[in-house]
Length: 387
Image: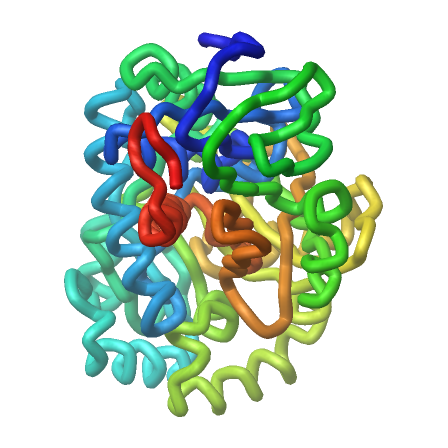
């Protein structure tokens, strides 16, 4: 990847090389801007590579988040083809085992968010995937919209493509210390830029800490598993009843109230640990499975076997099979806010701070990057000139 010369000047400096930072860089180069990306790590290491790589549209919160997810899915499709990022599989199966869950799915199908979705009867679902043997299956919501990439390789490949094809300059192993009128002061010297986009993920303590503190941001820790190849191919990413109580596109529907009450009675431990099920399959057949949600200003780095077992328990119930052997375990953290899914701040007319605060960066980041660049353009950002 290219690096910056101290004498270089950029139209836009992006702080943070996670998915939101890379998405912002992409939106800027598509508008003809010269871009530098600054990141403290030597390679992608945060939430953007510790997730499912699942571009989730169905179930996103109605309104802006759902529209962002639809747009981000379009950009992922374009970028994957251009950058040589494999689409590992497509679609979503939301598996329902309770009549209350079926009521939620039926209510969801009556909304505009159900575009590209249909309900499958249990017999059809079992015909399509005979290994899906849960005896209490009542329905499956099938979406054809979602995409899945292998995030561990997709994020580095996206960055390499931005550098090689679009001339984005990357400064790795470089800490952004302050934003100045002339650009960004870093641990490796000045990066001169007319405008700055700060995309810090869950690093709230360096740039604009007082402004971010006003939003009461915290961190969410999740636990993830990689399970061995089960010996069959899933028809799509798989989710279960617990997701209907968590994803706001379903959970905010009035029909979800009885389901949430039943889940609270039947699966209190799962809810206490913020567990819902996502299962995606990699090209080698292994399964990425999760996850849980624990909130703290500084989450501890340790996995709890109790939480992993609760995730496996929901896997067992949703698929009707024993979970394959666990091959890997890891944790990740992301920014979280109680009152919003996305935070966009303008501490200065030439600066934007953008953070996804709900764990949906992969699903909504490309649209958010476009919003950030459009906002800066409205203040006079232009290629080669600045404001």
